[in-house]
Length: 367
Picture 1 (cartoon, helix red, strand yellow):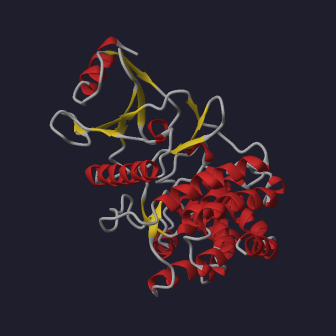
Picture 2: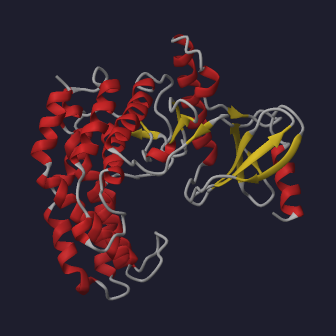
């Protein structure tokens, strides 16, 4: 890192109420949205992030969300007399003038939180039993926030999982067809359109007041769980930028979309794309062990459908972006988005085959 960059980062870090003298600031982690750094001091370490305000349009509101969620979880741990409260709490560090963020002269937003010592994250679920631990972590997060006071959180990304919004974008892309690609993807369009009415189910039930709006994480990959390096104990769920109001199905379904696919999201050999029912079974076991008494019977009943929904909505978004000329997702080559769409459509098909068994698993676990 260049000296002037280091000086700039130290200057930004010094705007926050941190303990100890700052020794240095260096890049940390492998996130794709925010720029993340580790602040090393003569005392504790901290995490510094430049928040991506192109994606998160209202960073101050997002930071208020994060602060509310973190404080509520800390209160829950205190009520439970958890002996490891200091290692299980993510705390937002305020600036010297009391704000949750610092805005620099270039319009960038920066935030600081504590660093959890002797912690680790894992990039992927290597065996089904790990899925149970991930399920416990995200289920516990959901349970802890079921009684969050103070009214709804802010919506940090508007219409993030709104199926009607995504369908409307899809129809616009088809009508415009700016790159002349629509004729080449008629098979994929047919697959998407044949499931469209079914995929409105969650939204319509929520609009009718039959599904409660909860606090959802919206990025339930296992690498967003912190574990103790020595004991593998669950410490905290991290990466809270997308925490906002939503359906519990967003978190459950997206976890299974990513963890139970036997192939990578852009695998082109679709024979490799299967739905791992054992990963589903273990994740559901862990998740429901924490949430069974919090969720409604209808919410629990629709957990298998949520897997199809979240996979479908990603297939829809990838296909829309391909037709639209690749304006949203980063691509490695011109066919990348349509390959992703085909992959996710195949995964939906595999989930449909397993739906009966998934329903049986949920019924058994929720008895």
